Length: 230
Length: 384
Ligand SMILES: Nc1ncnc2c1ncn2[C@@H]1O[C@H](COP(=O)(O)OP(=O)(O)OP(=O)(O)O)[C@@H](O)[C@H]1O
Ligand SMILES: [Mg+2]
View 1 (cartoon, rainbow over the protein chains, first blue to last red):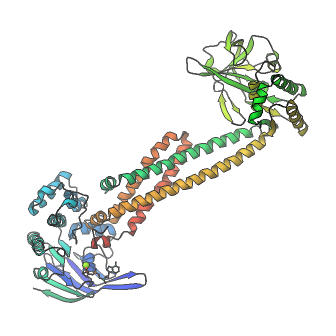
View 2 (cartoon, protein in one colour; view 1 turned 90 degrees about the vertical axis):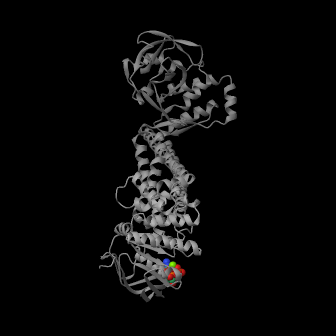
View 3 (spheres, each protein chain N blue to C red; view 1 turned 30 degrees about the vertical axis):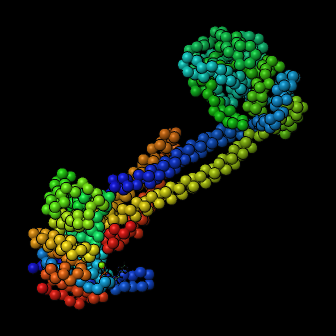
């Protein structure tokens, strides 16, 4: 089977003035559709950098990165945006909600930029549906800033999943959560993963989170030191 | 993007609108003033090869009191005019008063002028005739009267009427001898230069006969300060100067019209400099306001921008939306200046200004967005 994501000898160097930081060094691995992958490693190992490159937010300074066999380095910004919209769903640290906008507006962003001509009514129906399954349908008109932590987490998941992405990327989605909500979060992500058969890639410090994934990649100072299926 | 930006930044958006509107109004005004004063200088030039001189009033305030109460002042002034006739010094003279408003809303003006006045301003009769030599010499009623184009319905050529008299008796008996062409106007030179229409005036001849001691001092003053003298050489100039001095009344200095236009030019330059300075200040204000407001907008909306990019917006699309907002602001703030703009010239200048402002206002948010790191926002979405 063709991998959905494929990295070949990817390196990332950050240069700030004269100082250069090698954040990733010659990483090569691929991700299959429907795969569950945890990325672990010490702080500063390059996990976020890797995730941002995978999500087409950042770019490698060397090597090649293909999404569905398409080399991305030469893609213009607009095409990258389209690809981001079609293939990826993101769950950010602290959820990354826009506090002054409503839940509907927050969740609706991927639909707005999907390029499909979805009517406002249809959009609302889709949002309503996903919020229903997450148990926060009654909050649709609420401003995101007014929600509790657990509700925010669900809104963030709804936004990541609304467009039925092939890959869900989550950067430390559980880092600030207690044991109970942490498990809830992972339950939800895995539940959807099972239904939608998307690839799920989670950056985490947390052993118990990593253990629930089918494959663990370990980074050490930008180098892939372990790639283990379990 | 639009709605939330406007909703969250009403005061800032309003501030931008305000300074931009001020910019445009100033622009319309500058264009207007430049255009007007240019026209004025153009008019002054029409006298330049005629050895034309004006009498510039430099009488101190306290002197005026004395002159008006001096008993023989009118007599002396009358003598001065008579001497101009005697010495054969050509001059162009006119003055007038607003008298009343007629039923059509015209402000009807009394006007008196000498022969040269009609010549210099190229005035022509639509009906009847202009004043003849005898008309200027005449001292008895009925007084020959020329009427402006708009007064035709009330006065007929060849008929006599009682006309309101600004000085002396309440009315004088006048015989209408002609009607001036439509849009007859003249250019009054003096401390304040202006175009004056004659369409609602009734005009009587100012000639030797008019220079009687009956005229009020104020009439003479007006006549003198609005008059043009045509002095061929220095000797004539000296002659006039010494006559004025001998009168020992108003202190007039004889001034070349050319030097007036030079002064006008210098004055125009100075005004232009002041305006440019003001302009620079307003432009700086526009720049500062736009910068501060958009910086705040982009700061407070960085999460939104990052999230939108994450969800599939291209940075160029977000940029375009912000640019649209800027464009809308320019377009809106442009409107009030259209009310101020007179004619296509001002409008064109304002349109040019709009382009300049648009470039400026769009550049600022573009620059600010360029500096924004989406990667940073995604890494740390809720850090403002
Ligand atoms: N914009 C940047 N400019 C320069 N260096 C950077 C930049 N972003 C990250 N780095 C450096 O790149 C390296 C990898 O950073 P990265 O954020 O990917 O690590 P991480 O594994 O996600 O760490 P953490 O667990 O703390 O989130 C670090 O040394 C970091 O200092
Ligand atoms: Mg990180």
